[in-house]
Length: 110
Image (cartoon, rainbow, N blue to C red; front, side, top):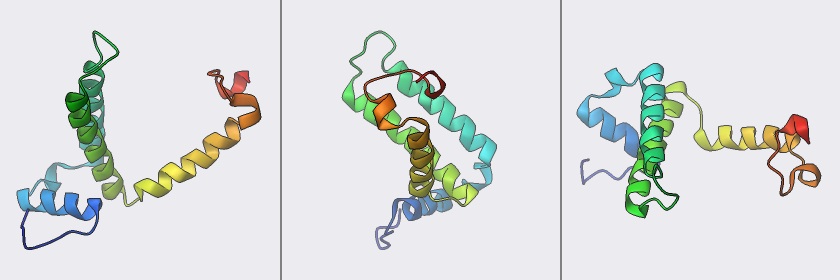
């Protein structure tokens, strides 16, 4: 990235990075969704043989997943933080604390 510019948000930083490389042409919603799945599989691979994944490797793969998630949200014109908060409200209604606390059952089994 150009050291003279200082993007003020993660989304702006990602946009600048993609623009500098002319990669937006490859960032269709379908391609970004595929990339999320691929990177999520690489994250899961960190735990393939034991439950204690190498923190550096896990962090790198998690960054890849989050990057593609943010790029997809930007491409779709949605705010990642807001859609998570909206989903949290829906999930909270499905899993009220008094019924779900300490339980892993699906909402229709509570």
